[in-house]
Length: 324
Image (cartoon, rainbow, N blue to C red):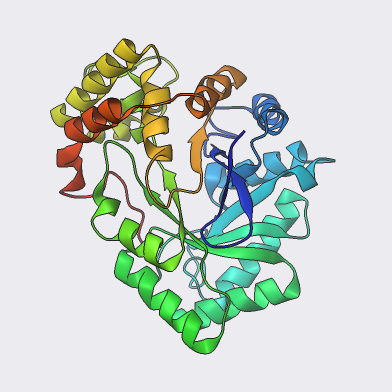
């Protein structure tokens, strides 16, 4: 396993991380526990979840899976997206974050989180309030590092500036949609991350499955896939996305690897990327994804991937989660 520093922090994270959005939903408890154990056995130490994944089931299952193995994991969770309909049921106020952190710790069966991430920018709470609350969490020992997610470049830079001005712990990472099908972070977020020492953690690295080769046409939906369990996912089945998937699959075949492995390796080669989190619903998927760590891409292959995905630097992000 290859390890990289998370941004400019001293924390070492596995280049391949485990995303757990499917735990308790497309992967039942037993399968999810086996996936976590297989990941740890293979050297994957970065495990990413959130307080809203599968209605909190993801956190509960991870807590069970890490019993006796907590020290092997760099455990990351998030808060900020809606948890309830109450007046304080969302956002990044001190009130909400402190409540959600305690609930997450209980479900995860741990007394600390390695990386606590704000799931999305909160335009209704002063950044100073959020950053002071996070700083207090670090000082209390319940959180070791803090990160952001779904922040625009200017929002992240503002947060970093406030932390520097006030002498507070600063964000060491940013989660964003980033893949061959979404290169919009390269316009502003990637240069910012490189300059400020913030590690990028791409989510949707396979564009929800479009870059795996399993969706060859809008009406071709494999059993058990995301598009079958979540019909709204078909909104991503634009022809340009389908064509990109076919192009990546063709190049992967010529290189003797799967489209998934090729797409993941391309991301691992990008500046400021610290770890690439990939979901799995079974151990076989985890094993397949780990082949990306051994794949070597020459300049010709990288140039071709950049060429076929160049237009995806423009337009809107593939995915973005914001408070309404």
